[in-house]
Image: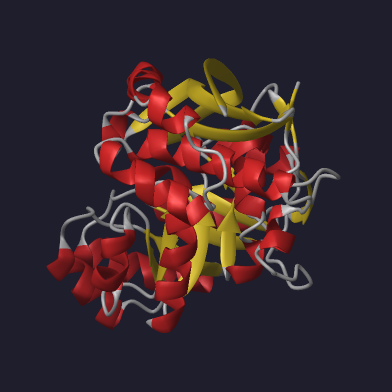
Length: 336
């Protein structure tokens, strides 16, 4: 098996702002694994919040090149268990590698990934489309630019209720709110009351990740469901979220790929938590991997490639929230 790693700089259509940062480009690592004329692809984007850069990911994978390239017939689960001890400190790199290996494995079996997992896609959820923080006028403009059935609205400003009130005047779409750790306890509880009136479905990670007492308080009193994101990074975090959140948003990049992501989904279901998978502004390489988990999810946020000025790959296509799988096996990804 041959390992190929390459950095891409993904240019965004618009400046993307959340409560803690703004970006115009997104550096991304693409991993390709080749075996017997077949290629599998994986992706992980850089992230300053988690202190992860593409050069760091590339260095860690190149250091493991002899071990990675010696693998051939292991199942994705066996491969992940083999590599995990070496990449415990860089789950982003592990994610890109796991996606590529899982994709390659399914292609070698001659199956789409969801077929390999024996999933049926009849009741897949629709994906939301994210509106980043900007002036109210700009946020309305971005929403009108792409009519959509579900919007995720980034908040964490001094005029959050005013923003949603104005956006509501222009659409009947479902709203989801992501404050990216930008609120406090009373603010969250009070905002939930007003936002419920405005047709909001749930709140995602309103408070700081490690403030578990605050999460417990809001869990008890919020009139809207609360979904964990920054509080749910790896497999061990799912159990912590029980009785502190109503659901978990699992990011493949943060947890180390599809293999642990599937286990986290199963654990969340056993605990009665709602299941969601989110993206980290990936291209269609990462987004297409997420698509094959849809049959197991209540919600999904896989609009990353839609936010790009130019995609680097072909894979799943998304129209008005509905996901259409690519023709090929595995994740169906091809690089442009």
